Amino acid sequence: MSAGGRVLAVPATADRDYPALDRSVRDGFAIRAADIPGPFKVSGEVRAGDAALVELHPGEAIEIMTGAPIPAGADSVVMIEHVTRDNGNIRHEQAATEGQFISRRGEEARAGQILVDAGKRLDYSDLAVLASAGRASVSVFAKPRVAILATGDELVDISAIPQSHQVRNSNVYSLACQVARAGGLPEVLPVARDQEQHTRELIERALTADLLLLSGGVSAGKYDVVERVMADLGAEFFFDRVKIQPGQPVVFGRVRDRFFFGLPGNPGSTMVTFEIFARAALELLAGQKESVLPFALGRLTEPFEHKPGLTRFLPARLTGLGDLARVPWKGSSDIPAISRANAFLVADADRERWNAGDTMPVLLK
Image (tube, rainbow, N blue to C red):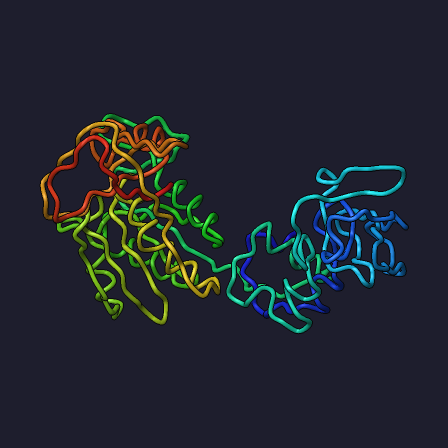
């Protein structure tokens, strides 16, 4: 059970055919289809868990339960609801075909076939497969260690009473939750002040982890020092800006064989850019073969428009019936609005207007 949520490191194969014999998938009667409509003499019974010892002869029916082995000589199962009884005999007036309601040996998997491939994050169905194949233990990849470093002189601890020019350091908590959900081990470092030397010391410390996430300090301001510090450390930058909102000033690079993301400091920007960019990197580091963003489609409950040029990820609520409504918000620092949302509406950069009833993609939270 402890393997749930972990990434399988070695493929799991079937120890035998599944199912291991022909079996019934309905409660009813095992018959020969050619003998329909009958009458059939009921000559016995076979239950789930019984060995397949009984044999069916022409003109006979054997009562059978779901999961029970198909008797020799039978080629069809008819449902108990569709037969009529008369003095120990049964009739079946409906048509039936050979193989009806029979699960054939090996049709789910053959012995030696891969049941769960390496690189799969194990969910509840995977655990059921592994248990059915007798896998009491499996090899999984180690969880990547992810250093989380928030930057900014304005940040104070969440237990502090901030002054009007200060804010509590909420980003490390949202990021730690997102990291854990993506299969990583979050390690929160002290806040890096807007000084190059202090920021460098903490980054050096963070580079012992498998992945580094920085929050704040990546814009073009005078005291946004993260990129300068990374450059001094010899970092290779793959990109430092993306055409989305919130989250344009996001940085991705590598330094000393460690990948890092510089995420914007506003909470909404931090959350969105982690989900779009950093989560995929973390899942791949954790051993997954692929990372898929959880997109869905929703029907707008009211018209929507935005200024083209950027792909926007805006707080929204998607109902179980597929209706999509925006959650009013005041920008990427509006954490309460994001908390009320269960998805981010995704507005295409090349389109300006949508009408009520139009479908739009959403990124699920």
